[in-house]
Amino acid sequence: MTPWRLCLCVLAFALPLEGQASEAWKGWVSWVMDGDTVLLVRDGLPDPVKLRIDGIDAPETCQPGGPEARDAMIRLALRKSVQVLDHGHDVYGRQIGRLLMDDVDLGAEMVRSGMAWAYRFRTGKGPYAGLQRQAQKQKIGLFAAPEVAMSPPVFRKFHGACHGD
Image (cartoon, rainbow, N blue to C red; front, side):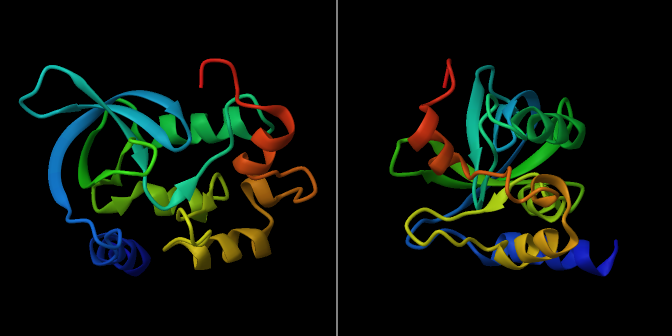
């Protein structure tokens, strides 16, 4: 395991949401909805769980960069076994947690590759802020043309939600 992967794995377990206990469980990704939301089948349970990945915010599927972010998550996780560090539900009632595969924090990987912003509700910054700064400096992914990249909250403010969201 490379040193940065080890660091990301340790970071994933060291930074649970404030005030929320974490539960770890295993499953596999049955569907990728977008760059920060997946459907998982939890080991031993028949019904899928919709999981919003903690610490990131990917573009809406109908905004520039959205299909690319979704495709990046598909390449990382679709039909693969994962571990979830479950943080319960967010203020919108969504199941949230960290998603790990083979000791790789997939949320961190999305930000590192420029396919998502580091984000934490109420603070605006998440545990991956440093990775976002690196992606911006390297001008990769969403940050290749920063004048085009628009964070999802700003996009929704001007254009509304995507159909089906």
